[in-house]
Amino acid sequence: MACLVCDRPIEPFLSFGRMPLADAFLTEAEVEREFFFTLAVGLCDSCGMVQLCERVPDACMFHDRYAYYSSTSAGMQRHFAAYADEVRRRCLAGPDPFVLEIGCNDGILLGPLASSGVRHLGVDPAANVLAEAARRGLTVRQAFFSEQTAAGIEREHGQADAIVAANVICHVADVHSVFAGARRLLTPSGLFVFEEPYIGAIVESTALDQMYDEHVFYFSLSSVRHLAERHGLDVVDVCPQPVHGGELRYYLARRGAHAPTPAVAAWLDRERASGVTSIAAYRQFAARAGRIRDELAGTLRRLASEGRRIAGYGATAKSSTLINYCGLGPADIAYIADVTPGKQGKLTPGAHIPVRPPEHFRAHYPDYAVLFAWNHEQEILDKERGFTAAGGRWITYVPTVRIRPGSLT
Ligand SMILES: [Zn+2]
Image (cartoon, rainbow, N blue to C red; front, side, top):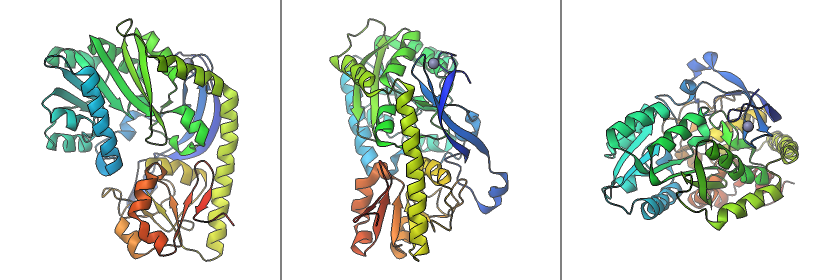
């Protein structure tokens, strides 16, 4: 298949096989009609973009029952408050600034900016999360952001001093339309700022569960820079973020508008040295992913054969890839605890493991709990101290399978 950025052939390096949609939690009655596709990831050798080999139509994923609400984690609320401060400081110092957020979800990033009186607009295709943003008093529009949407926003609001996004740009297959729209909407000195899971961090920690239907692209600075150049944009700064297992935040501006910081050249050097622009690193990644699968499935089956009770914690979208790739089901993991009300009482995609509220976990501690929401590890371990105090042990699998406290034996 052809690269979505430059149309050259891409080289697949890892296939997970048939997968459900990662956020498609379902009822018993919906099991018969479950949608599956082949999840495989490849590298474009020409422009360096890592991407899905088979895509799912957007309407299947970002619909009125979109299950992910950004504001469910206290740690993420702190992170986005700091992101908002950074945007305010770097982009919104002029008179009557305007900020646009692409994929505003429930308003976790836009909320702090709007509450200080900044003109703003949040765009998101998922009506249910958008309703929550509107309830917070944010100005919102239900739409996929595209060049066409941008034209309408420009007519209504004028150009934007800041266009911001988080964990959104990598979702959009028609990324050229997003970049063209952003280019059009930016003021001459405006910044287009977005942060996304970083392929360098995914490879380094073998975070294979970052790969699922919604993540069409796995960005590096090298691939984002190539994409930006096609749209007359420069990457003028880049900054690592310790969320979702390791992200990069990119700052883009119209060509020549701002001098790049030294961080840009430093990260490009680092990417060349680490090999994330070449297929060899991805073939090794695929081999490590296979070992994690074998080891996790083997460990859980051994514990089950010893009569141990096993549950999961965090029915995250990314846990769907791991659970289905490992071939796990309710016989291996009795239930998964999750704070999201919309997931509770449903079954996980593909594997059909029941989702229960954390109160259920606390009332029925298992012997072992697989920590699927490993990106919120500290927050969860602190919140669930009672589990380890009662003798329970956590199982983690990034970067390798571990039982904690203790060892695999
Ligand atoms: Zn390409």
